[in-house]
Length: 538
Image (tube, rainbow, N blue to C red; front, top):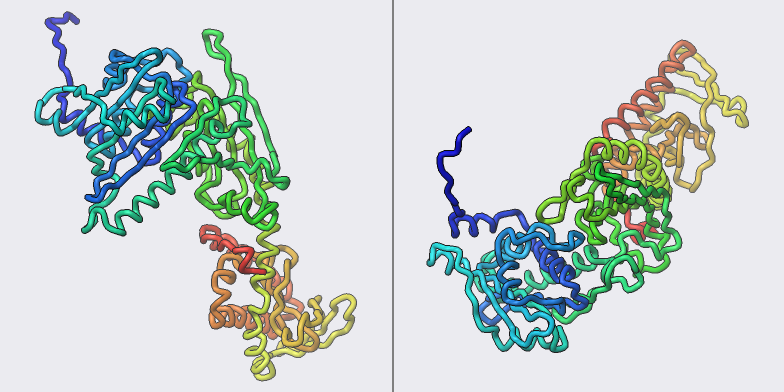
């Protein structure tokens, strides 16, 4: 095809710069993008200040002692789609993060910088209101403020460094009737607290002076030093590394690299060495699954990359997935460095080959703790049921039971169908008033309930390890009426079975219990599992 003409068509300044405010940044992710630039500039010290003045105006400073920039370097850094860094391992990746992350929350972005061997400080600013007035990509050059000069001197010890300043912050807080009042300041305090936790997690390997594979960095937020947060609790004696795989990769040009996957099963709450360690672990639905690291920087966390849904029984399993920049394209790292996408081959390998064994190990540890906690939680929960059924047993029972061989649970049932010999659990009461409803750890074949004798009383055994008990009984333990209603139903089903059983039907009635128990287990699969607090169940 013949080209008739060529024209340079630059993007419309204000429409483009305003449009790029809506790239989907969350505040913590945006701040991390700025910190990435500091680390990429070899900073060893990053200091963040988030201030609100008496008018409610917020100003944010991110200062570092990195290599800084000269004037041409500053222009390049402030250019949208700035040239690719020579060091491809850099945490800064696309040349857009500084600008898009900042203007997602502010209308005025300034960068103040001084490079090695220079006494002059340069400052440039993108002011969206000025761009709108000028209707062009006009980058402003200004003299640094006294505050910025002093901040740069402090963070860099009179050496090289950079300060990123956000002013006209218009998208961080919602509109408050009193922009500088108590509610607004409390909201800002929560944002600062959340940022501290995010930075501690995302830059854990950089903040940990004992981690040798990443450069060491100190980060302060409003003068508070950030301590690293280890999601895998590797210092805890009861943490288990249950699977590990280092997978080599070779590209067509001969370049070689690798990625690693490690699966950790964390301790249950009561297994942590200290109360402080338990709190620091943050066992929750939102912090299970994959923790993905690119060049030692956490870029994704808190889910199973679409493989599974987050459920309480997965809270003890956290999987470390680490790779270097050479695999950026293979894993489709996004512009915010907050997401990766796996190809189908790797996705299926992780789901079908790597994860099954760790999931079983985590589930076994979780269930062991849940079983113990359920036993504690259900203690005394059936007392009202025992009393209520005991008051009506004589008028409601429709069969007579005679023990023929207690050692072998051999019982003769007499009902309107005649007499029949069956195997029936013969129990001793665990406590004085437990004569009709007996919660037990298990029943053969995973049944939810089974008729029984306690002493001479018609009774029902209820399996506290059945999914129905976990998901329906446990959330309602505080409601005596609900528990009594469910217990009464199971006792009635047991009595109806004993009142109608015969030689011809006893097999079918047992099958009915099995099928009902199986169907109930399936029906409650999607119900949320209650989270039992160990402290509350002691």
